[in-house]
Image 1 (tube, rainbow over the protein chains, first blue to last red):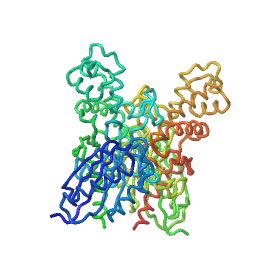
Image 2: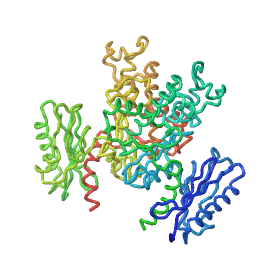
Image 3: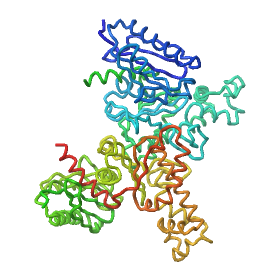
Image 4: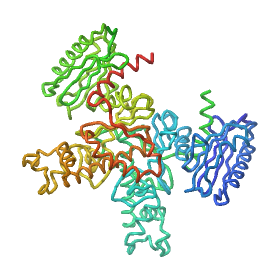
Length: 320
Length: 320
């Protein structure tokens, strides 16, 4: 029986997941449940406490060494407060850290979800022992994180840099961030769906695949149609891949990391994106050794955040 | 009399400068001479050795604690070798570090010029005690550097990230870096001159200011005409300032530094750029606390590189 465990929590806009990890990074128990944000933060916090108890019990461990939380941003890392009306409606000024600390009498950390996902890949995934690990998640949005020597890079007042909103093409579509043509607005899932819906769909298999309803076209469907050889879908994917690649080139130019690890729903179609990426990088490689930057798929998939959240506690214990 | 000094060297494409600094960062003696790169690396190295001897003697110090060199890139920091056919023609594979180490029996460092200029501002200029200091130089090109806790940020194999070549507008002009519309190609001095020359100059005072020769229009002249109220020149500066600002927004989004320090010839007209910058930042400040990032002019001007080069030696001595 394991002596003690850390519970990692991945709190997203729709689901919350908890996993019990030993110090070696083995996942001993895992549970998931809808968060139902609209039922309010109190109900959500109770649900999270139940999950922690459940995976702790199932892990068979004697004691709980701590709880690490990765949460969809914005979060106030220093205060341990979630303040996220965008993706957790009603979760404004929620002091999750102090609440769980009191309940379990154990250290609790709160981090941005992109940061803990990157940290998970550093601990047990694709980026083990990589000095400068840059992580890019492409799904509903584009999230980024930099792990330097196993530590999360933070900006002023512990701000989480939000690389998904760098401007890539000022002629691009408007984004809620205030920019036109930011990275996310040009290559995330909704951008791919939008490009397809706005195109002339006659002659494309996309319309039939969406049961004749253009509004049902999403990024997954476009990727599937592209894989079946549909010219329109292929063109849309190539365009998104081009913009995705310009963003990666910018990351390489500004950070020259040893590795960029790719994750997220859209990156499940990485095979469609990588040929374009290789072309674009080759065209831009004069100023920095871009060809030496390893580009790798994430290895922990949807569990990366769980691992990284747990690591925020274990890594502190190790350094004591 | 000072016991010992460090000599900082700033080696550019046209001139080399050497300064003798005490441990407190006071500049005791300074000399400058043309580098005449085309006469070859051997002649240049002799000239540099003479400069070192001269400022050492003039400083009145007993001993030489070391020599720090900042050089126009690319330089191989780890090997101490200059390899720069672009701006120092004929200077290929020049082992300047070992040469000066043998000659003076003292430690010698070699760094990229943008990095030492930023380090100089950290030591004795605008960025003192700033945790995350980002430096942007806009002149003939756009150079960038990040100083974290007084240390130069380096990429893989000690590569110097070259932020001037991030893509800002893929519809922009081609650059030698391989990109279309990289930051440098849109707002550095040559870009400003090009935009003015390509415009319809009838009705603008620029043509008269350039003695009727459009090819004599440079960025300084455009800024001067804009300051006199010339509509064409003002429009060109506004356009360059807009692109400059998009790059700054990207830096803020990716690094969220406490301070960005601005230097370089074009930034002598910072008063024309900053109103546009403030507007653009205000429009893009949703995702990160952009309004809290301090934007400051460099304080050491053309001497920043000298200071920073000397600091590369003094900072190591202090940490012993």
